[in-house]
Amino acid sequence: MPEAASPRPNKKALLREDSIHRLTQAAFALIVDKGYHACSLQEIAEAAGLTKGAIFFYFESKENLLLQLLDLAEKHMVDPLIQHLAEIDAPAPEKIASFFRFTSKRGIDRPNELLCLIKMSIENRSTTSVADERVVQIYARIYRAIEEIVDKGKERGELSATLPTKEFATLVVATHDGMMLEWHRRGGGIDGRLFVQTVWQTFLDGIRVKQPNG
Image 1 (cartoon, helix red, strand yellow):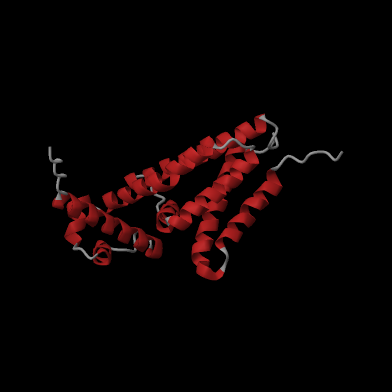
Image 2: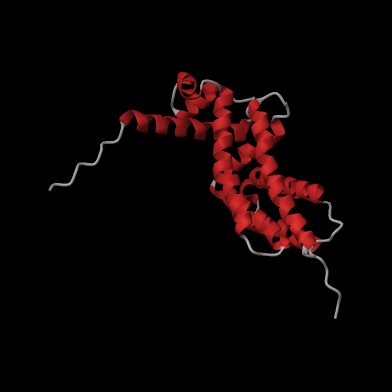
């Protein structure tokens, strides 16, 4: 019997997928470059090679477009990070170092997604916007993952028992975000990998429980 012919691609579905991809990538780049409030829908549409009406057709509003960007950033950046940290069998200091290494590598692969998430955490401070709430939810997942590492590290004697869990987790995230923003700001002016290594090595030297001599 002759093999059944493969179903032909749905042209409308392919067009929709391509248009959404172009719009989200253009929006990522413009938000990172100018900020969410400073870039217009017209600019996003023009950068994507589409019309402003296409944004309303696929997303209905600028905030819905932003929500899609946050969903993509969470899917591609945060979900893999949480899974990675959960799978590592290592002392707490090394897991903290791995946090920096993993996110920086993902950030190099998908810089606009990570930078968009970071910049939206700074730009949006209102508690009434759905997008603002999504940013808070995403960051809460990251804080919890680090806090779990810290608590287990203190239980095992890998970290000082007096290390404040929430405050330290906040310091880790703040350092990470500042590191990525500075890397972006400096462009090719610094060695990104060496910069990241310097950051996590500094953390390791500072948080390891010092063993007595002899």
